[in-house]
Length: 227
Image (cartoon, rainbow, N blue to C red; front, side):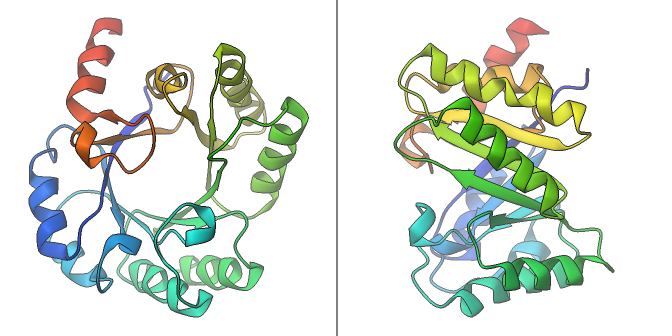
């Protein structure tokens, strides 16, 4: 089984700040996620010109734990620009309005860009039936890759989320899934070895963009012990 990808998630006020951060990890990761919702202005083209690495652009709204508080049209616009610039990935929330999803997927018909459809729960890990329903919605969405992230409070929460990987594999669907929180940290490593498409890291604990996120260096060290 192929090992999942390692992505570093970066947040900063402008492209220069983000690119300086990226240079610290560019040789240690497969993908760089740029959090547009952290930027004063979404400098998509500048990031693309400065970074020679597969890029993932995310413009996370406040209603899904991000910082973007503007209109949905304004939120989708830089993601459409990223598709036109043929970046590797854009992230769109499963809860987002269908109109935005359809616009992005239509733009991707002539682009190599892949859509990651994401769903987060910052409080709990839902029951297995609800998680399976979320996965089925993702498979039916038209997106290329799913991302399901919950908050774990015990080992059972972690096991329920990782069990989704078998379901996704059976459906021929690429899925990133793991848990936030201290109890969920093990899932960020385990998912790479159990068929998860990608795990997300930070440069350092102080620069984490989600609770329980592990640094690039630490995840690579733990990964090496299993290879």
